[in-house]
Image (cartoon, rainbow, N blue to C red; front, side):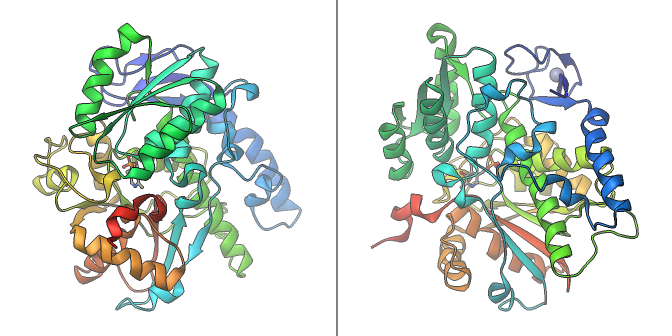
Amino acid sequence: MNVTHLECALCGLRHEANTLQNLCVTCGKPLLVRYDLEKAAEKFERAWHKEWHDGRKTLGDYFLNREASLWRYRDVLPVEGPENIVTFGEGWTPLIKADRLAATLPIKLDLYIKDEGQNPTQSFKARGMTAAISMAKELGVTKLAVPSAGNAAGALAAYAALAGMEANIFMPADTPRANIVECQQTGANVTLIDGLITDCGKIVAERKDEMGWFDVSTLKEPYRVEGKKTMGYELAEQLSRRAIATGGEANRESWLPFHLPDVIIYPTGGGTGLIGMWKAFEEMNRMQWLPPKFPRMVSVQSETCAPIVRAFEKGERFADEFENASTVASGLRVPKCIGDFLILDAIRASGGTAITVTDAELTVAVAEIGALTGIFTAPEGAACLPALRKLIDQNLVHENESVVIFNTGSGIKYLEAFGE
Ligand SMILES: *Cc1c(COP(=O)(O)O)cnc(C)c1O
Ligand SMILES: [Zn+2]
C-alpha cells in the first residue's frame, strides 16, 4: 500500500515492486523494499497529536485496536490486497522480563527475552514466511522452493499448505528430526541433502527455472526480511507500553513515542532478523517515532561456524565462507550468506560487536535459562546468555543498561541436542 519500489542494498539500483524479483539484476545482491514513509507516518502522526493533546500518554494508543500479530504494522509491510495475507497470527510475541536470570549476572541489568518460540511453527521464521508467501500469492506464484537449515523449512511448509501452494524443500540430512517430520506432515516435498544449507541453495538455484519454482531463500527475495523487521517495531512498541505501565513516561522530554533497549543480542545465521530490525529502526527514525540513538547490535555465532565474527574482527565488509561449519544450533549453521555486508554494516554503525560462544556453552545455557525463566529456548537463542556474560566481562555492557536477548525458536524442535 505504501510501497514505492525495491532498491538494491549494495548498488542502489531501483527495481519494480509489483512484479516477481529475486536479486539485483546488475550486482546480484539483495533487494530491499522502500516505502513512502511520509505517507505511512501521516495517519500515525494525526493520531499522535490528537492523543497527546487529549492528555493521553502515548502514541502506543494508536495501535490499541490493531490485531495482535505482526500485521498490525501493515502500513510498513508490502502486501497490497488484504485478501492475499496468508497468516496464522504470527508475531506480537511476548517480551518477558527475566529478573531471576538477571540476578545471576555480575552487574545489574534490565534484561528481557523476546520469546520468538511462541510463533506458529515455533520459530521466528514464521514472520518472514507470512510476508514472503503473502507476496508470492499476490504476485501469482504457485510453486515455491527453499533451502533451509531447519526452521525456515517448517515455516514454509505450513504457510504454503495454508495458501494452497506447492513447497519444495531442501535440507541437510542431519537437520533436527522435528524439522523434517513437520514438513512431511504438512504436505511439502522434502529432499534431504548430504551437505550444508549452502549446498541446498545451489540445488534450488539449478532446478528452479526448469521446475517453475519461485526461490524463497532468505534475502534472495525481498519480503522475508520485511516480515522479520517487525521484531524491531514490536520491541519499540512493547518497551514503550511497559514504561507507561510501570509509571515511566516514554521519551516525554523529546516527545517521541517509542524507545529501544541499549543492547540487542541476536543469534545470527543468515542475518535476516538483524538486518530487518536495523531497517525497522531506520524507518521508525525517518517517521520520527524514535530518538536517533539506536541499540548496539550484537551478533552471536557458534565458534564452529562464525563467518560474521571472523569478518568483523578482520575489519572486512564481506565474509568469507566458513570451512567445515558445524554446530548443534542448526539455525546458525550458515557458512556463507548473501547479506553479510548488511549485517556487518549494521553492527558497526550501531557501535555493537560480534562474538562467538562454544556449542558446550550454548547447550548448557538452555537449561540455565529454562530453570530461571521457564522458557525452553532453542540452542540458538540460548547462545545469547554466554554471549552476554562475555560482553559484561569485556566491559561492553554496563550497569543499569537494558538488554534484549532474542530467543529465536523453541527447544522442543531440538530434542536430539539434549541427549538421553
Ligand atoms: C534461522 C534461525 C536463526 C538465524 O536467523 P537469521 O535471521 O537468518 O540470522 C536463529 N535461530 C533460529 C532458531 C533460527 O531458526
Ligand atoms: Zn545492485
